[in-house]
Length: 585
Image (cartoon, rainbow, N blue to C red; front, side, top):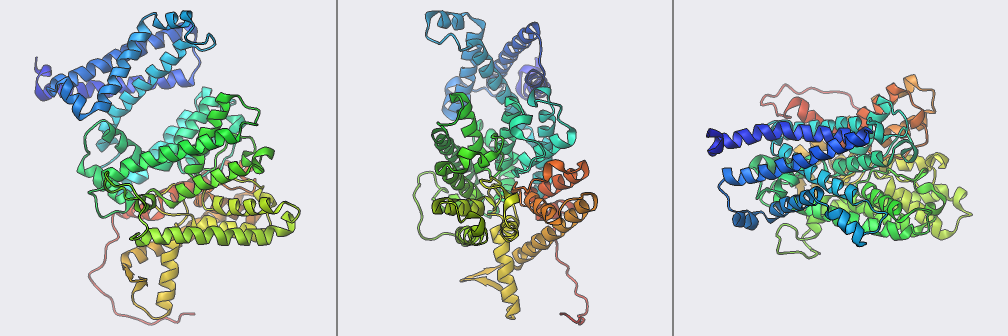
């Protein structure tokens, strides 16, 4: 009877749930990725019903072990209670003939398969239960006890490997997808880059495109944010380790509001992506797509645009004839890209999100970082658009003025890590492409879905350059002094990024017989997690693809995070050697 008293029962449930959840997820992956016979499908469906019963019994066992009453769990965690009640309802319906009765009475159209819908809901219930159990153990599998930078570094690696295995499932591709192509696609999705060695519209099935969209969403928000939110969603509050980890990710010294900011990040993401999907859906009513296809295309592109990924399920992306001249489509995409690029922390600073009872725009008192990001974003977009238009005018002079403006703005916005293209980059003049390279290298803002060295890093380096050239010992911005630790970090990121791009270009150019400028463009695009391409990526060798995979990974995780993960800390020396003189210049 020891398993039914105190910690003994909880330990038993813990061990059992770990093994059972792995079995459930493995079964779901097999069912998702491999075709099976009718009898096999029935056996799997029976297993799903048994698994749902086990999870419901597990919930009851949790109540017994913690001596919780239903009224208490309903009061303290109503979402968890409602979640299991819905699971119970779906399970009861799947065991009964209610679905057949509903079909016979004519409440549901005969062309809808109620049985399939029940299986989908049952799968969702099982998957969420399994994920919740695994997330509760993230102290182990996410290395939370390690340095936060190591957690970030390894979590993205785990997500990329998982995505690679999922894309290799037979049901996810229309033809045999090679391991390098699967790895490249998964890395590009998780790192929200958009570069691709395959044509997503033709190579991936509907299931494969769903996996790709989920990888983009997980990569944009980061697996740490998602898993912490799942744990918080089904539990009141979260541990100090989680708070410290999120504090590192958000670069916020105040951890008292981290929980609220986390909820706002998820909420704002869902709201913005929903409005983006609605706008795309109604903008594409003239496309030759069914309502279901149009809805999926709208959701996919809303997620891809907000996460600054640049993936498209259209064969030619936004270069399609209708889309390239659809102003609502391009404007919606630009708004999503900008909102995703300015960063979650910037949005939370514009609105008073620290306290739940406040929700209003704050015209004054914005932090220095927010002011730098907003002003820098505006300057880069306008300046980039003007320069691109100036250099492209000889080729665009026959286009309508409105289309020239939209093309210039869109290319300037998307160059800062989104990767969508309404005009072939390979046809752009070299000066315009150079402007795009600079924008890709700078990127957008930290704590967002964008890549590059970030606006704040670029601003700090430029500010330090002018300060030091004038003989100043401190770097100041307005009435604020930027700490030397941040200045050093900015220079580390700046020069490490240039070194990474140089090494990658050297390696790729040593094995590829491609134009040097095209290689440089693709490499910077990979580093900035942009996804714009001059058309050579699908034709690269496997070696070059692996090089770009590494560049995308480091560009997304951040070179400074990697340096911290490898060296633990950048400490200072207590000793000082004699000074010497060198001839400079």
